[in-house]
Length: 150
Image 1: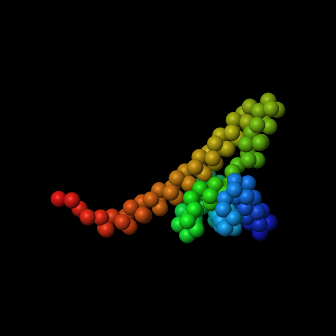
Image 2: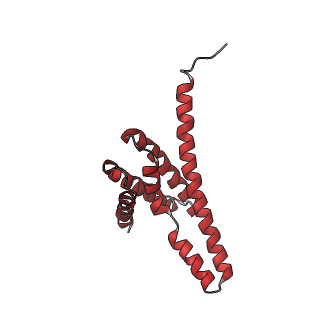
Image 3: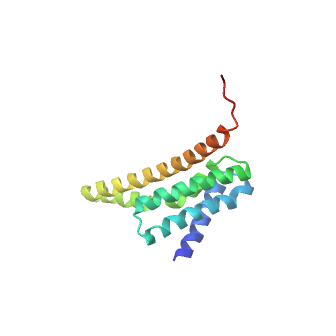
């Protein structure tokens, strides 16, 4: 089941790259970003992590990988970060939330909608965290090369 999920996340991320016309030479890297994100997302709960923590960590890893791939392949990092988070998007959770509201089960709908928003927030926070780490690293790397003014 795990390997099936890896394959499906790879294919879905690559399809997202094709859909949004990323350069052909970066499609495999976009699929790799999605597969790595799904791998981290799937393995952390085995180690005892909650869903929000595993979502945050996998989004942060995808963001860091996207920054690295953007430097390596000389394209914007959004080509990889958007494709990489596609397997993490809580689509079924949002669907179940809307279904609960349609069926007049408001308490369950609010509960599921809250979980959906929390997972979406974890994805956004993970992406921002990865970008921030790379930005701070680049700033610290070049801080010693700057000259100080008197």
